[in-house]
Each structure stands twice: as C-alpha cells, then as structure tokens.
Image 1 (cartoon, each protein chain N blue to C red):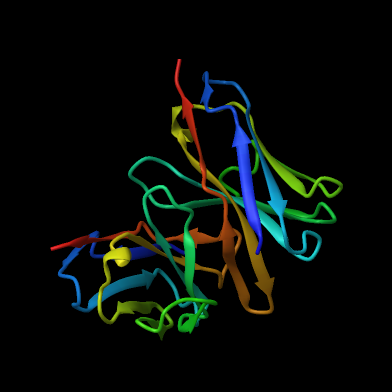
Image 2: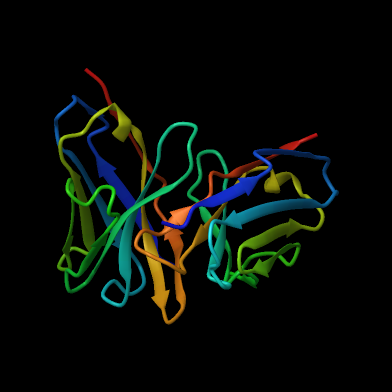
Length: 120
Length: 108
C-alpha cells in the first residue's frame, strides 16, 4: 500500500520561498502523476499542480507564476516550491497521488499534510 | 474555472440516521466528480469517483449520485467514524482541478 510522507519548513516570512518534499513508499512511482493541494484556514481545498515521472507539469493558473514542482525519480520524491509567499499562502499543504486516465482525475492517496504559516 | 458549491456548510445528524450532502457545479461536468472524507488529524480519503463509484474499501453505506451540475453524497446510516468533513472535486474541465468548500457532518 502506498504511503506519502511529507516535510518542509513550517514558518516563513513574507517574500520567502516555501519548500516542501513528499516521499512515496510502496507501489509504483513512475506510473502516476503526483500532486500538491492546499487548504487555507477555514477554507476549501485548492489544487496547486502536478508532475509525472518524466517531469511533465501542470499548474493552477492562479499560482503558475510562483510555483515549481519537481521530481527525483531516484528517490521516489517530488517537491513543491512557491516563491514570494504572503499571508494568503498560509495553509495546510498536502501531497497526493493522482489517478489520471481517460475521463478520470482524482486523488487516491494523500499525505498527512504540513502546516505552513507565513508571518512576520 | 468550474466553481463547486457544497451545501449545507454544517449538517447535524444523529448516529444511525441518513445524511445527504449536496454539491453543485457552476457548469455541467458530466459525471466527472469525486468525493473525499477528511477526519481531524488524518489524511483525506477518497470515497467516490465517477460520481457514483465507490473507491476500494469504502463501505456500502456511502453512495454517490447525480450528473451534470447536481450531485449528492448519501451516508445511509451514520457511524461514529463518519462524523467528519466532506469535499467534492470536479475533473471535467481543468486546469484547474477544483473542490467544493466542504460540508461538516456533526453529531446532533
């Protein structure tokens, strides 16, 4: 059974770069897309973007100018960088596995989440 | 962007009773909808995809229905572990993938 373990610095100052990594244990790594999703306090979920084993990415247009998702297939890990953070980026950040196919795109395994707080 | 709206925001239900959660899309999304459960301190769990197909290991008391713009998640007889947040997600028109704001199912 696949498990996703994520980590990263939890407290940032405005204008800094958020950096998170997600390690995947068990199951196939190369056969899937991998995604980042966040949830600001008292709000719904927001899809940030995705990457596959070849490094092909898709991003949420609202965040595209500040986001980079990368992958390290040798370690079964993928990472998120979000630059120029503000208080609006304060959220619980999740990594997740994507089940993507013809007429389907949903998240069947998730990490536990990392709380990121942006405050001066 | 497809906007997903969930109602109610909070649903108070007694154990053993039925819970009916709604999700509305701002445009037709066919049956391209998933539902997730989120309990405090736990990772979100996929419940339903394709609007009505239960994910692996999901109990039969969870069922999904709907197509187009109106969708429903029904929990036929609430168990203690079902008191949680529930989110819908569309994948018909993306990017971006979009989620609803969530419904909290609480003990009445």
